Length: 293
Length: 284
Image (cartoon, rainbow over all chains, first blue to last red; front, side):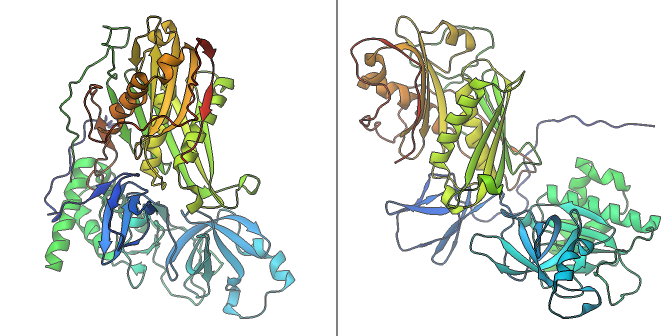
């Protein structure tokens, strides 16, 4: 069996072909952004003796009167209405704690969870005792953000039948800033798989269910074996997403689809090689630019 | 968009084993830093000073155990692992110094009831270990996007028996020195954040204006000016900055160091006295 080894080598800087128009104003913590007091301060800044000072390292963004510093890497910050994919970490009294790559664990209240069969009734003591039967530690769920508490913790709900426990598939964890905000985050790609783009950076790829039953996303996870063709499609999609992330491209259904089509001539395992990654992503970029302009 | 670090000072490469003696006043060994090299932690950095190298990883702000949570600010935890053996008392005291320095600088009140964990691993130790740990911790906190009031840097100085000052000493120079002092300085107001001293030195050497200016000022000017962030939005992983050793006489245009506050650690006393003092105090 042939083995291939790659050794680290000095990195080449990415070229300027994307046409960054304006030079960004980069700051480090402690740098003065401006001494003009007419601005409102946003994230990543703090006020110190009539000067606006940066508190994180990043680029300064200005929207009218609001100045904020966008850091390169942050954890997920919840907004009401976001779709997230999370993993159950704890089962507590009347609620579950869900890990969503944010600063504090998110909370899924028992009253925000839809019961099997979609019935609406008051949650009783028996429901509380049967919580572990619905969701255990380690389960993956898709949910929507209902509210954000004052300390930043996020409260989730699965009140629609399209949310719920996830069955078989592949999870890819990326940075939350790379997932583009769109109208819908559940996509059925024409290549034969479906994808959920969580706003918190967790992306779930799963085989498209043949028939949309009423309980899609309910509690019964579909454990039938997935066919080889479906598995190949899912692996290829996962590798494409990883290559888009390493080249820092925004993730949305069109970019993932174009990347998938650009990768078809290569073998699935070759997509992760750096030179093939660059080639595929460049092609994707070109197609996206053509489509826009 | 890439930004290289430009400086017109000379680079002085220092070989590992006790090489040519450096001039008085103060040049640093060749230093380098790399960020974003580990995939699991929120932020990571590796800092090299000559042959001393420390790897730092930062997790946070993240969920905290109820027993450790503080209701109005973030809980900062520092874990220092030596190169060989289990962590002992020396590591615990260094952890405390680093933690106090970080607490003075990190804006913990923005993230109540969370925890920020800094894990430091000593990869190799060839002198000035505490300073290298402080620098690695600062770069890792910046990489993780933790809000901070300012950047800070650490530098070690060694005073040998005839009073000459050597910055960033090697282990051999540290052993032969009469006193070894480590300082942490922030970059906004150049205030002293932490000092740790060991050995015999007189007040004249410690708190006299000339030494006072040369000690923290040369140390801070040596580190803080070349330390700029390379824009990583176009780089795939990691960013690297090459350090150069500037001369202490160059002025960086920030003005002279303010006069020492009354609580200066090196107290004015007429005699030489041994000191194993480690004091850390916050920015106030």
